[in-house]
Image (cartoon, rainbow, N blue to C red):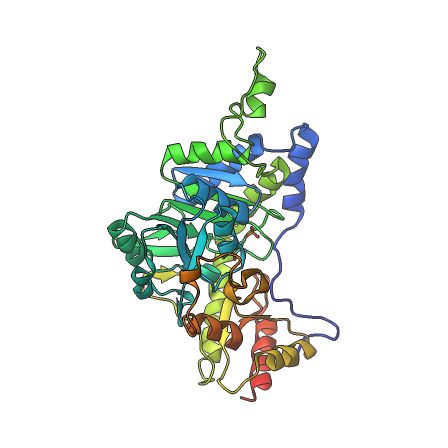
Length: 393
Ligand SMILES: *Cc1c(COP(=O)(O)O)cnc(C)c1O
């Protein structure tokens, strides 16, 4: 059991003086927003995931918004996605005036069930917004097949999937190359590396990347850094309706340091996730996370299914009473007041009763266990003992 008053958190950032030192650079340089540190972070990030282009933005929610605008999603269009995700996934579709069309998940991976996608396609469908939920790669091959058949764009919500891998033509490759048109990443503290807040958009098409760069800075024709460095007076123009979705150089400097730690962070997360699975495999009633053969998760979260008779809130409270913090499984956007019928959907696209049964069941009957790279085996043993105790195993 943990020491008295010491709570095992569900997550913990890994930062120290290295990040402090990195943040000093832009602070003392006099250039603090979207400048040389952002450019360097983009280059290093692109190199890490193997993407031709990477564009840094303020967070993954704005990344998703720009991705959808960039591929041409317009008011009234439909975008096929999951309800079973952080609410930002579906919200980003609504920011475009488009309609998120929710498809149910496959229970084992918590990811979109590709077998259900084609039935959801209509004349108005413009894109598929798939999620690599909790770092587990979704079935991109199957999704891309469907997208090609129907000329749909594919955006990967890779908020949690930095460093996750898929097997592609016999080779392991990182999520974010991307295999769809665009992939979007998050640097929120709850993800695998953090810049406080922050996001990254990767793409293969340089034209699309140029569009993201315009959109993130008010549609401005000349970035301020170019004006700043120019010996001649330059007047900028505003080419398209843009936004202020910039990342600061302070965030980017921290991100560059976090990126250096990433291999070590993922190694540790994989070790601990494997250990959870091994040590919980004798508890027959617990549903353990499923990793398909063509996927390697970064284990942003380890989510387990509770035994059928267990009340989620009771199990979580019993563990919290023992100093172990957990979270319920991934939410369902369609169950939230912000998604009450009529506000957002084409009426004929309303969700049929039971249409998202697996999503709803996963939300109500699963639980995220503590996991962070600094976690000791002793802490993990305490979590496992606390969980077994709480479910009466
Ligand atoms: C965290 C998360 C987001 C939003 O990321 P932010 O950087 O916080 O905006 C989007 N989608 C998924 C699946 C997430 O987990």
